[in-house]
Image (cartoon, rainbow, N blue to C red; front, side, top):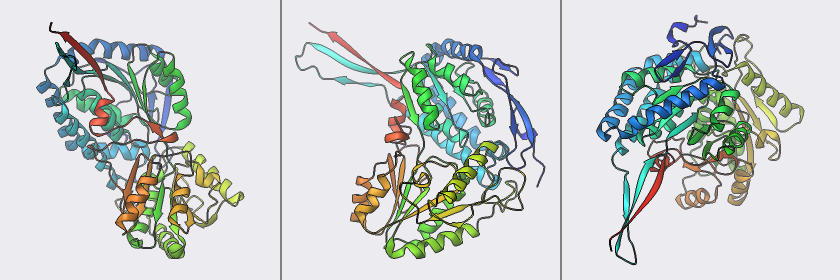
Length: 487
């Protein structure tokens, strides 16, 4: 494999106000390059005192950022967007080194994040409140939209740059300051982003970056100086976030996991549906994505045909060196992820949860790094862990249905409700099925790159609150009513 390029990574550190700290109170973390398993950096982790300092820096910067004229705030966010795009090659290299994303595909993240910053820059000055009618008369009543204050943002390792667009952009646009906690195994995109933001004119303290593990996350969530938490991650950690935030009665937005159904009806374009099942369900992020269609529900009339297309599609996926421009699927992000996926697949095979149709092991030629073959199970038991639990790896579970009602029942029969997908040429069916699915978002005949103008979030154990559009902006605003008597 090509030698890794640690020089592409920013210096591991904490950014607190105007200070850059290479030592910290939370210990350190050895970051391993996913393509080889070799150590390429040692990351200082935030401790409780570092969290205190970051919150204090954000609190001190808040009056100035809130009071900055709206044109100035908008100009800074737009400049961040421009610089993200200009630095897309560097961000792509960071993503490859950080989590193993194929370099050829990694550059899109900077463009996506830039879109979010540009979109929310456009909202600045357009959301300020409204006048409220007073039925009795003799008074004037209006509502103000105000920033909340200091936002604690905890982002995931599988898409840190896009997550910053979804969380940091609306928080800053609304006039808040942010304490950003990237995960210990993927802090580099956040650190480079902070450099970009500072060069675009963002004042010190408005954005603070404190790489950390669960200790830092718990301290941030429980901190009385934090006014709201926004978290993307797994359900187990989310419960800890809620418990910690409850100590200070801090409101929380949660964007959690999924076990998204991808429903294929007999009238669907089977080639397109199969390409999406392989490309989105297995290849994208090596299956490490919350909204990916990891359950494929296929009508009995086309089941065998569809399964054959999907299995054939997996055999064309080039798995390997993420620096190779022909690679479509890279390694898993960490050794722990590899262990998790391996254990889930081995358990499914041992428990006869489904018929293994392809994959199910590491590639023989890739014994270093965290690679795993795209894996497909057919005739999966709907009650099995294979169909019910989020694996977060390149594992696709295929289930059969015979009626529309059965498809809806199977799709809704998990604890999750983040996304769902439908393939049909029948417009009536598309609307009926979309309305019946327990999901925060439904896509028909395609896999969306979530637009910045649309709401994104889940139901059930996939979380609550929304990111994107005006809904995402409102998550970082509070309303104040002002009543003025005129008599």
